[in-house]
Image 1: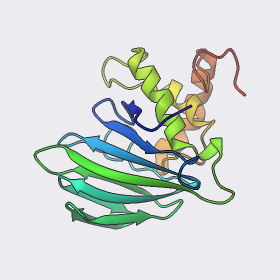
Image 2 (image 1 turned 30 degrees about the vertical axis):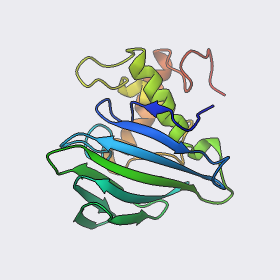
Image 3 (image 1 turned 90 degrees about the vertical axis):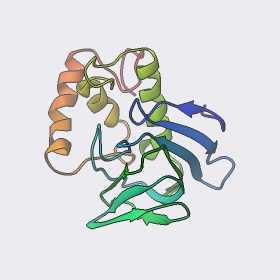
Image 4 (image 1 turned 180 degrees about the horizontal axis):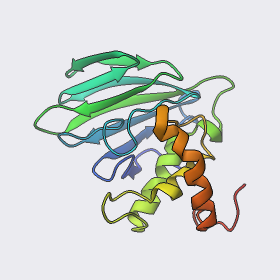
Length: 191
């Protein structure tokens, strides 16, 4: 169970996500605070631009400067600026400042409400555990791509990638399964 105050090292090893509130407290949404170093940010490094079919994201820049992509629209934003990403829209952002970027993000589940297949925070918590347990690729600091591909199969509404990276996840999941990776690491079989 993820609780407010938890700090995750995810979605990339140089970024942190602090859980500010959970769906149990806020009528079906998470509120998180993402902190990224200069040049960092989800959707720019690591897994690349992405979409969440089961979530609407509402971003608010607290400090720093970011370049945000929402669909085809790209803009630079500073403290106080906000952006909403409709479910299924390709997006990502990058810290373009010299110091840390701090962004509050509301993750709002689409109908029928909170569910595992769209639970991005639960996905991040598993990635965080893999990073902390050093079950990572030495070059990237991230869990191996076949492990991530298997994991993503349990969260199809939480995170998908467009184009070739997304198409490669299916074959990579098969490779991961054959290597013994599971959707929830440590469990002998997937649910």
